[in-house]
Image (cartoon, rainbow, N blue to C red):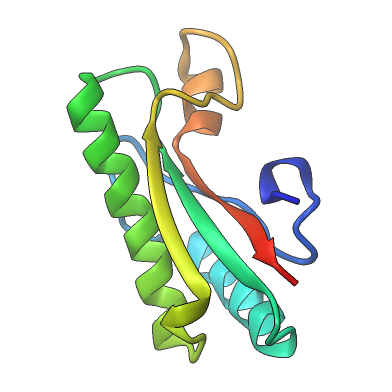
Length: 119
């Protein structure tokens, strides 16, 4: 399951500001809950998928998605989750969550989500 469709146990997708891979206070609260879920479910392995909105070039968006996924991985590791349980990948703007060419859609696509890879 994946967090975009609410099928990843208690893991929740994290959304980012435009052109940012920094976790804000709201994102950190979500990540604290995600870390607690992972610590309580030690057999769950995850992949973090980084995404970007449609603005920016392909290579730029892939790099931004990678920075977002790595920021989340680093935060989880700092919270005590083993790095061996976490892989990352970037899809840039290739896998949108919302269609559209406005801030409403872009804000939903600037994210990093979780995919459960082992239970």
